[in-house]
Length: 81
Image (cartoon, rainbow, N blue to C red; front, top):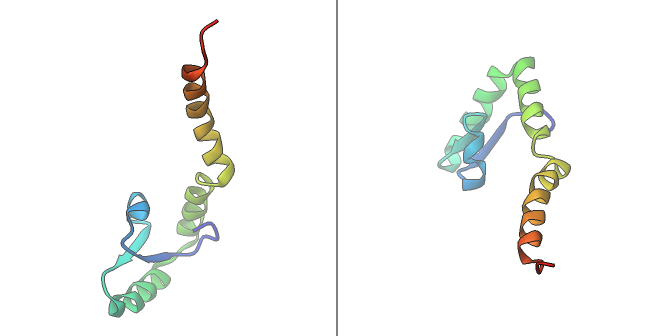
């Protein structure tokens, strides 16, 4: 997705939030059909959209999102002065 390319995957819970931008297949015969469909429908706007979505999930952004959680936990565990 970070390269802007269409994504076809088996159904994974981690990828569910990305539907319908990720096409899921249910059996091996369906993979080729989904790939051909996505490639025939691909457009510059879709490439840009996929890159934008992937950019929201970089390692740096994920770390930024968990730092406040860690800070909260650490404050709760620190003894009161």
